[in-house]
Image 1 (cartoon, rainbow, N blue to C red):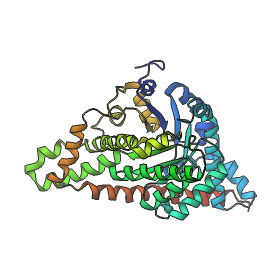
Image 2: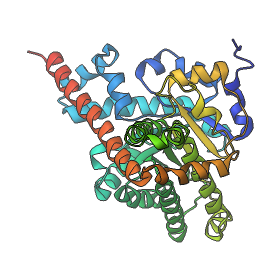
Image 3: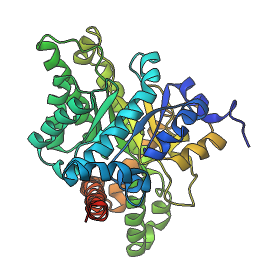
Image 4: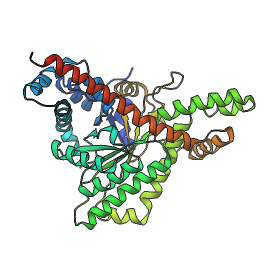
Length: 379
């Protein structure tokens, strides 16, 4: 068992990777646990999503007093929801503000997602991004916007407006490329408007374990229908998500070396870092830190749920591997069509499912708030 002082998770920063946590709740803020995680686990950012807030708020009495106050003030359920969430986000931003300042804007961010039912609504997404940023009013806030085609139109304008963005639900390498160029166009437009771009920040959240779960299931089905390829298929299981991420990183390198990006760097632009998301291992047969160990490298963020943070703190094998076995990664992806798997179709399905996985808990949270409002309303 490692001690706090020599914990492997503290050494990810030595290889250019920041640790953010995929979790936020009032308990975490009030108890001081977030401060402890910053000190003992080098947690330098927070990401949230509707599923996280649904778990945090539903059935948790810590929010009841504020909900009751909202009821007495005549607030709608939507207004009560936003008061709870915005308050948590502001508090987290304030806790992380020293990280933001000491890292000169590299870290210390808290991400808040626009309503997931707007994933295919550019104007609605942009309007909510602007409203959220104005209401929360913290320099270390990032607005999360899904990387759909419509979402990326909003990303471009949001960056132009001077609002930091976390582009989420990226699965395919092409979706990452499209995201990177949306960021570049947004910075170019902001610069053309006569504004400074040196304080702008963005991350591209590239999902991992969901890919392996989906692909592994598809590979198992293919193995059942074609026994002659069973060994070849077995060699691909648990390999696709990491290979896909390594290819995305190669595209990141190409983009950041191009003339258009270098022209922005000359004006003070900061790179849009790749952020590894969905990093809890779903298959117990795989290492519980595989999505950390294999993707350590410069200009990256790994956002980890609490259990994975503790696993990494205990037994991560820290070394820069983001550019190791790249040819093997290409080979893994190139082999998929030969065994009958269309990765583009899988990625499209994952994006649709990802949006749905945020809409359902958002709706469930709103339903639970309706029930709480009824319970806490004066008779």
